[in-house]
Length: 609
Image 1: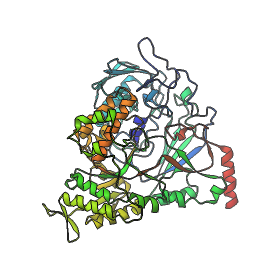
Image 2: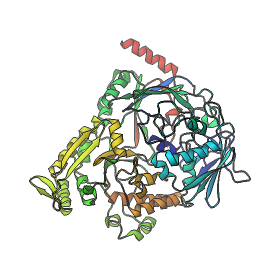
Image 3: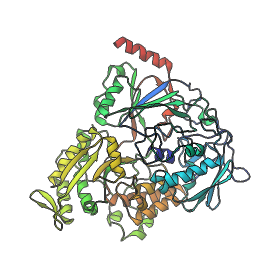
Image 4: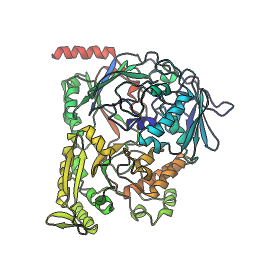
């Protein structure tokens, strides 16, 4: 679902021709709650170096495989970065929340009653074949994605009644839900596809033929399942716009695919690719004690991450009867010993996730008070009483590995739910069914975490099957909801929007390919999501998000795992970057190839060979 992150965060740029609100109310950008940071005619984003040179290449790595270059459909396994060739109507700057500026759209206007949003297209906007991007392309995109695209589009845009061409360069989206304040921004994040191209090519089939795009890069070459490279578009229609200055600096972007992370790390150390963000604590602490780092030709550094950490957790598939009782889910959560895991496996580098909006001011802390309590009060009786009386905290231990207290509590919960211990096995007293649990995963790296967890579960009489599958099979099983428990991670936004329906909404629970892995179907959750979307200001949005967070946590749909508010980077020292970091993104597209550093790296490699 990489396209979803691009859609809701915004990845692209603002045309130079945009102006302040004109006599008809059209503006150069949209802000959810306040003023835009960047005025019309600004020179460049603050976090770029306008003198950054163009050229060179950067190579990265990915674990898995791919068989599809179409990022808009459910079928197949999408290659990494397939959204790069596609421009969107609007896009955000990476140092400003809640706002978006135009790219394909030259200006944007929202009705006073929020019943429609209109986009006037930039007359210079072009496809890679030189033809103009038209209003017909925009309408075609919306209608095609709603009819044939990934099911998530139908959830995200459920409140859009339709799109209408007003002229060759103007299109209007009719908004059925005027309370969804973020809907115009979400529509603006829509990446546009070519009507002419998809009239001649089938849209809803996997493909390894690069589709026609309009963005700063196009697919250059592929080795199916093994690597993909993108080439900077020399005559990119937006390349000289002020907001593009200092960005898209590499001529070539390449991702090599590896079977597992261990092989990938060894390839990095051998110089087979250039740049990597390390997510495995053991590897970070033990694998990079290298002469190249001591010599300064390889960089190991930690950069701050100011964005919400999102959700990383074991997800219960509540479509299965054995997980419908929250007491069972809560008992299984008690068996996970994070403190021991963090101490003995993660080198103490992580914190325990205790919120669906971790590392942000949207996270629920303490007891509900003031506006949040007033918001939750009408739901009293429909929610667990703990929502009002206890701060949610995951079960904790002293890190010694002696988890007896939590296991005793788990045993009581299972007994109360009707799963009694019989000859060392948990058996349902009513049906005689044994409590078996399959943990589905795709990377051997997880085994060192899952093994101790499985042993704790087995002490409760639960039979555990750790099921390692390849990445394509893993994706297929998740899409088909064919799992008991699995680890998933999804991003959260600085200002949550309609993506919440895909994560938590009742309508998404039974959709194939949904991110609502736990199959949450709770009318209270639906109502709180709607309140987030309708919030008139950021403070109201935070109140509703914290209330939603609290309700989800006490629903015990997940076993929270871990997070850290930083980026752990390891890369060969042949790149430079701006002095100012973007606040809300790593923004590697502002980095550039540094030939002087590359020469030093080459000399070092010759000296050790």
